[in-house]
Image (cartoon, rainbow, N blue to C red):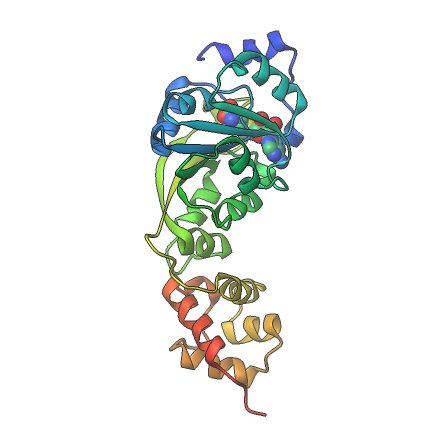
Length: 281
Ligand code: SAM
């Protein structure tokens, strides 16, 4: 691929669209490394978001039983279908990854797959929504490997003190690990910032049985930056400050703490306390 990405695109008459977050991988060694982190077997289906001209799709196909590649740009769908269309284990889907039904695609195109893995060099403009959709898919996923802006990678792997909604989301569903950093030169055209590859391995069992309630609280908690939890939670949930303080104390959390300091275990304790709490009449 080395010299090839740019000339390949030129030969195909494709000018990368910034509005679609099109920064194509240049080095096959990087694509190999990402595919190795996905770690798919012939029993697995891989859902790839944004395959582009197939840089990552190719090494994925060498490992996985099936690859379902979801691409929004019709020009790239056509390229993929003409270059890789003869590969029986590949399905190229022309769709928006944010609205398409992953479970339906799997049932239709990889009905015998035992497990699913996600892979994506994500277009920056859908990063958070796409990661959330994959994490919350409810599918039996075994690995999620994404190339994202370095700042997003840092948020996914942040520790208490620097947590954000993205950190809570990534770490509630699994254990995110940095695979490698990629400089701007790893892509064509080069983006304005460095990137990183993150692999999330799911926890062996769900950490809490009501993620929707936990994330409603977390969204409320992170609703206002740099404010104390008693204020952000009260504003976001509609509970009085007295009830909010009571709730936090029951979860053994000091009401004056800030949302970025809470661990996943503390968000779980807070959600559990809320479930059990009946404000006095
Ligand atoms: N995987 C290729 C690579 O690594 O060279 C391309 C990665 S590029 C950063 C992002 C890709 O996502 C582009 O092919 C772009 O057209 C596609 N894309 C953008 N928005 C999308 C969406 N909503 N759903 C699916 N694909 C999308």
